[in-house]
Length: 193
Image 1 (cartoon, rainbow, N blue to C red):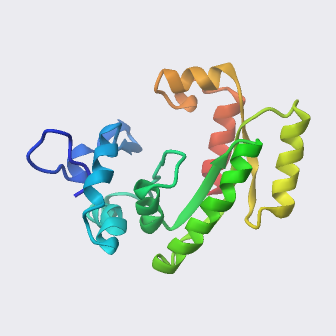
Image 2 (tube, helix red, strand yellow; image 1 turned 135 degrees about the vertical axis):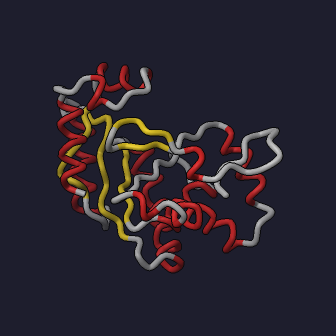
């Protein structure tokens, strides 16, 4: 059981919410309704709480080569579930001090979850919304490479108006602006992983 829309008598199964985006990409959309799920999950025993997503993904794993779990930028039950279910984690972060400050908390959570999920490895940090013209962002990116304690991926996702427009349009940048630097960066990231 993964999703229980507010007001529904029963829970939806993951297989029932998956929608094709293209021939080779299927999505299981979510939204604000998942915040209500967090309250419900707090009533579960600890191991049930953290293994809910892994159990749901196991029911469809044979249909796909691999999956991507996108989490909001906070350390809540959804992130814990994702880390419990995942084989690897890419940490997207901006090259700013707030992100650097939060990185240590996330890495500590990952270390804790590696005790539960022995498959979990940190693939690396993905610097996103990067502006190479800002000296502070260059400095933070260089510092992360030396002191983060985990790999920093060579690919960066540059900040741009087109990239932000693709988010607003709810389209991947690879569809919204296929020839853009950001689309090329995501394609490089996919090949890297």
